[in-house]
Length: 248
Image (cartoon, rainbow, N blue to C red):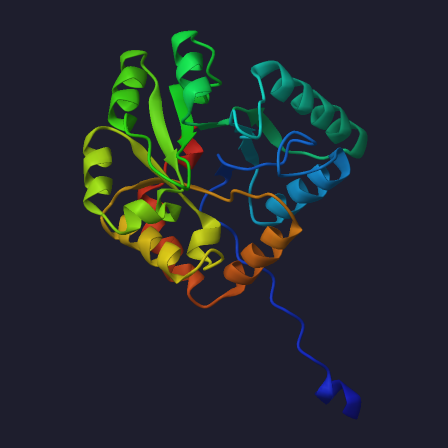
């Protein structure tokens, strides 16, 4: 019929991600600035499944200034989500660790051997966005002495490193691995973050990619990115070096 000619085209389905294990997300319920409850958590997991994700390591914040989580509080949130997943028949392999902010509490956790390491002894760490930790190289070395492999979360987002890119060389050469955000590649944080993420990729410095998923606004951004014309070329560039699927 004539009106069919004027119907808007349906949006294309998002393409699948180039990895199936996500190592950075905030989907555990009620524990940080991510999912507020189990219903939202399930919806976020469903979105991740639509992108081809079959396993995740959930990484709620541990930061003394605003998210004073502990291994036990994170385990409690994980148990709530696991129960809800059983109730709803949600199929996803879910493990938990944390995104450890480098602060005095983190330094104490190192001393006490109380870190939430990922499989294969990886550990996700993050800087303050205000200023870099002056002892980051020492912390990397101290973790390595404990046979822990540090992953710096979203290095492309730290403005003080964007303006001084030789620091990326120094950290990489010290044995710190880098995890960039899918949201950065999508341009969510801004042009500079996207350019820096691609710069790191071109240098061969990116070992992991994470959704850093917090809420449905992030879902919409990632969906648009996975429908975009630029996504396939970015995925092709990153896929050979990415180690996400080695963790689970």
